[in-house]
View 1 (cartoon, rainbow, N blue to C red):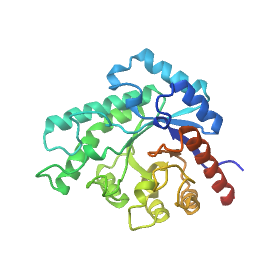
View 2 (cartoon, rainbow, N blue to C red):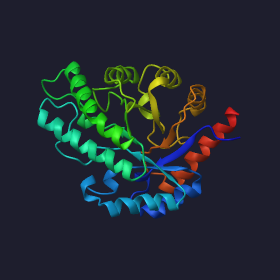
View 3 (tube, rainbow, N blue to C red):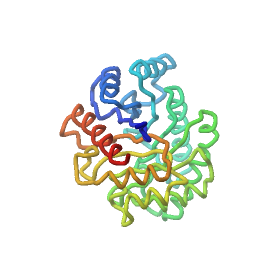
View 4 (cartoon, rainbow, N blue to C red):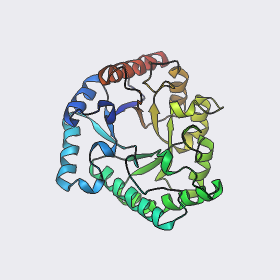
Length: 277
């Protein structure tokens, strides 16, 4: 049958592999896209020239892949925070995110997954309501750049073990509604949803109007099929809502090795597709 899903994998899975080698291997496994962590490309988006951006884009295309976009947006950055009470910090953060949106566009990508728990968690003296207001301001100010680059920021709910702001899909969707832009949408991650009292399939159904992007991983921080998470009802829910975005494998525990993680993750997901047929 024709696959209802598009599969991708995050490039940091492959550590120090050259991008061309990683892309060729990803394509050989059957993935259609690759998702990039900016810090694996350069210390700052400003460090990537127009020529370098073009070569990255061509490297991905030569392997027959699409560039999905960027994630881990503020990893390894300093002095940035979307819920900081200091306007100068928020100004710097907006400018940095705008640079990433332009980079995403130049690489042929569309989605920018915003997780960054450390750069959104509550700071001393800041209430949750104030944090929501600061985040609303930052991403609302980013919308014109997203419109110009035809990119989308997908805000990611994370578990309370990682942050204390936007810890559920419902909280995140409420914030999205207050921003009211088709360029600020929702990202869902299986590992993070496992921390919610609501089941993952029910979260997917309830979040359907907002859902832009999806990460497939297990509670054990490895890929689909490597742990105890039952992905069949998850994929059933995605299929029911007509999800048309990417299903991207994001792994944190690399102990099984990049090659095994990549191969077995997509094999597991394709088996689930067959069960859906």
